Amino acid sequence: MIPVSSNHAPATVWEPRIYPGGLSHLREVRAHLAHDLNGFDGDTVETIVLCASELFANCAKYTDSGRPEGEVIRFLNWKNDLLRLGFTDEGGSGAFPQVPEERSDDEWAWAEGQRGLLMVDMLSTAWGYLSTAPWADLGTHVWAEFEVPPGTPAPQHLASYVFTELHVAG
Image 1 (spheres, rainbow, N blue to C red):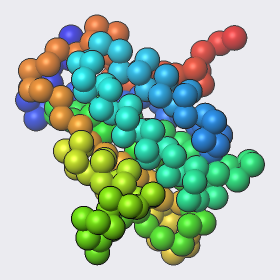
Image 2: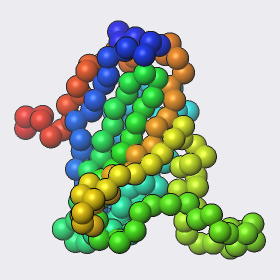
Image 3: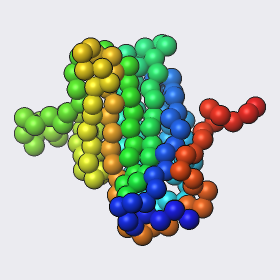
């Protein structure tokens, strides 16, 4: 069992998963994440899956990842009572993700978009982004962290590195 209550607990890193950038792949993203987090608290998993849906959808809708040959890469790790989820897109939006600050309550009530990052902001411990190539618009990595209650025992199947189907023979 991997202890998680100290700041020196070993990390668990899941192998990145690569998805086609279409919104039609959201079901697969959610299913893989629920599988990978099997054994963690159900409410925590549901929160992470909900936020993952938003982050993946943003990659597909607002970046070159949503083009026919586009891809999105999912990252996941757990260390020191935090599960960190991240998605890297292929760039092309010319902007970075942000929660709009200049909206009245009435404007928020009628807004059709840009509520998702507000939800991620409210449900996660922290979130942010970094440019994968600061000198060009070649991609953005957006991440969110979620607290796992201190002292939560690790699911029995976890190791320091978890392989996904990328390395499954077949």
